[in-house]
Image (cartoon, rainbow, N blue to C red; front, top):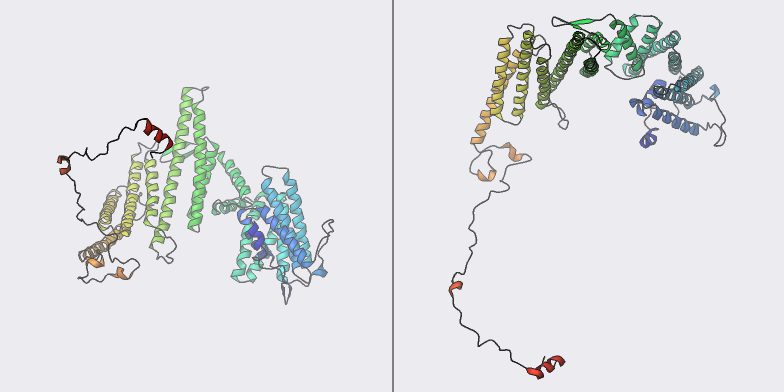
Length: 586
């Protein structure tokens, strides 16, 4: 926060201490200023309180710079910007920041109103205040001193704020008219400028479009519902102001359709659907899969997969709770209880099948993306690129999901399904084995990689032989023949590398230079960063140890007596005792 306060005056497109005038009059990049301010001061993370604080601080700086103070520290004296003051575009910026401050406060209260409904009244008050400041800005921009582009942007900004007020009041017709006016102005501005400048206007139009369709739906246009659902799905579960309203609307629409849904067909059997949450999920399954198939890029597809898996997990949890509730019921007949349990177990197996198969397709999509990146040349050496180990992990998850599919309750006796799953497991095992071999090639373990390539060919030929009886099983799987061709090419290059590596070993290139001075060999590693000159640390060599001497004869030598040489201690008597006391004999 302190860093924002320190740098907030430097990173925006217009400084408070400079005027921004053109030959056509005063200009103000309204949309550019508010978008940059919002992105740099909290709204990238949905922090409206932080953005509101920034608007307050910028207003204070503007008033101080312009000498436009509203009273003193003891008393507030309101002032309004008039047309006569428009010698500097910072007066327009002052009104714009007042509108943004009120708008950000209303959005902050909107977030808090989810838990405190009374704050909705304050929200509407601040939103009306923002719209009033927007109208003041539009009226000031009608002056001949202001250029045409700023006038149009002010009209669009005011229409947007007015539409937001009507939207919150659920006055759908008036809100739709205001949003349409705003959208029309921004589209005209986008067509009048270059692509770089038009991107911002197109983004604003995309933000407004869901509001317009939501208003149209509430007015009575049923076609708008399909457009809203497509927009929500294509967003991949992203957030935003309309996210909660769209989620609630889609759930409400599916709940109405779910009332007529009682069962689904799955692999030739009928699965009753008695749980409302499961009905709503199954009704939206087709829309989710269609949105994934039409995804513009891999990032959007990944978000859609995650959204679908999250919904599927929640539905499975609801079925488990229902199953637990049914198991504790004692007020019904045994036959009815067994029937309810069978229905829940069948539905649980079907939903688990959807979840596991979605995991397989998601990881296969990620594997295709990584394979494409793996074949691309690495431009930046400092940046870590994809490695074969990343793909091995993805194929491990795929194989684990397929193994769980084969053990689903109710499908044990479905021999066709079991054969299809076994065939798919062989295909993914071949690809997993291929990338394990690729990882061994990177560390120059030629023999291990060659054995693994042979294993890949074995799996691929087994797939081709079994696929003749199951014609439709390989329709959605990777091409095995393409894998065989790639493995054969890799085998030839691997054998050449192994032979070349063996010849270099025979010539002694792996020995230090000091041990092969008599043999000429062109070794490029000698001029590299780690030349192999000497072996360090050197090997240990045997040396003679220092001898130890033991005097064995000492134990058998007889020494002569020395009693006559030792001084005998005599007897002193009383005299000696007295001398000893007084120290005379010492």
